[in-house]
Amino acid sequence: MNSPVPEIRLLGLSKQFQEGARQHDVLRDITMDFQRGETVALRGRSGSGKSTLLNLISGIDIPDAGEIEVGGQNITRMSEHDRTLFRRQHIGFVYQSFNLVPTLTVSDNVRLVLELNGFDNDRASERIRKLLGDVDLADRADSYPDVLSGGEQQRVALARAVAHEPSLLLADEPTGNLDQQTAQGVLKLLDELVLNSGGTMLIATHSTAIAERCDRVLELRDGKLSS
Image 1 (cartoon, one colour):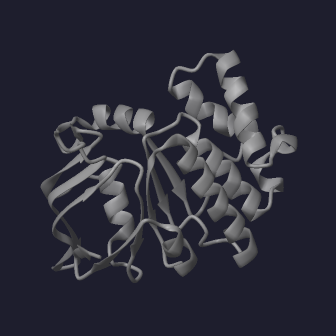
Image 2 (cartoon, helix red, strand yellow; image 1 turned 180 degrees about the vertical axis):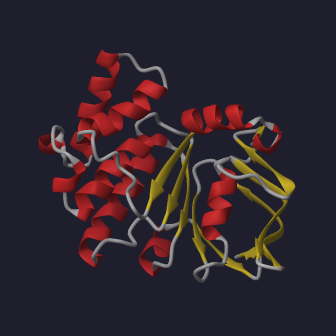
């Protein structure tokens, strides 16, 4: 029997940045697989390359060397346009700063992702109702982000990230701006939303509480990724 294709495969991945006259190797020759349905915490000090790695896996940025496969497709060989389409269809992203559109209501922030993925109005409305119910924000559908608490904004961001049922969810310090009690609620919700979809989740975090909930914890140090 053939082994299942990993959801993410990193092959000799390297990324460098120029800092004045100095070249900084953020990621150095990383090779690693992530399986479908796995939840993985990425630990490491600030500036160790956690966000850079997520940006590469999502196709927002491209490596200086090496290749990245997501769902069996080599995204490093795609054009920028094709990477954008692939990310839109297959990847959800949760940011520390929420990144909600301030001029759109809660409902329309989620609807935007669904429209980009070809959902018709009725199907999108049904999906929005379910998701806002799942994150306990059904009564805030017509509210704007600026009247929501930080925890409520992050719950909207989670609903938006999973709205199109992506196979891969990437989260960059998703509880970094939240108090401990609110963060615990968001963590529980994150678990449930990903578990229900059977998707893969990578979380860049400093939080021990998040790491303890994951199947695997990896550390980025000196450009290398290790368990």
